[in-house]
Length: 337
Ligand SMILES: [Zn+2]
Ligand SMILES: [Zn+2]
Image 1: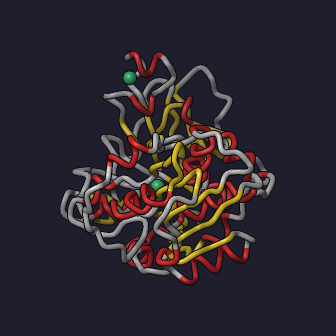
Image 2: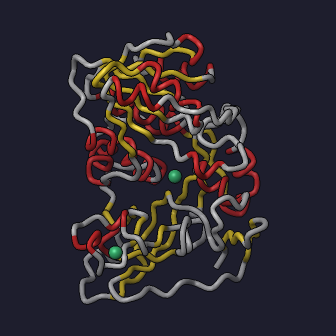
């Protein structure tokens, strides 16, 4: 099969990569479309030490299932990316995404979606409702990460919410929270991205316009930059909450990730403010797929407005290039004939 293979130095498009063999209770999935994420760009630069096929945002067709349960055969599915060992205390509690020996699709120890086929356990798969197009379904994984914020923090309608970062994730979080009727302002650095949010009725600000004092009960940090956390600490109100969506650790070389053009200043964080003002800090990663799929089926979140370009899989190199341009949002790869 055709696959993008990362050998630790650079990605190669290989025509004869071995089709993966599903293990017990896994499915072989034919990829229809995949999304390029900031994480994939980082992987292609070697930051995560990953060797293999990157890609974790996808929609596909179940080609074959290795299980007595055949219900998903032939169905169109999306898949949760973390695969736990199934035997540890975290897996026993349903916290597979925190399993210490987990694999993650296209990120850690498991070949991903930038290939014609991939495998995932059946329990990771969710059937895509008819009303959701392939293009929309690719957004299930990042949209689920946006929904995770509301799973973790109870936001009241009277709360003022600031979302820092106008990248894909910041925009999705803003779409989700605004749709819930929450009082949201999105702060970013890109005119076109802020304009997109504004056109959906979301209040926006340039990062520089944020006043350097407490004004928000809830601050969501999605800039991809450590500087964003400093801003969050400055603007959150006493007893407020900061939700961290950025993984700075992956940016050791100071390269921009989610928010292109951001400078990694590694400014020290004023932890005393967190203590004195009793601020809650919540780390937040992957989220639940069902609410994301429901929102897509009901057209409650307009993810199509985030698509900057669609490339055939054979032109994955151009897709990666386009994905790194400043004003680009989501770039999709099309595997369909
Ligand atoms: Zn991603
Ligand atoms: Zn485990």
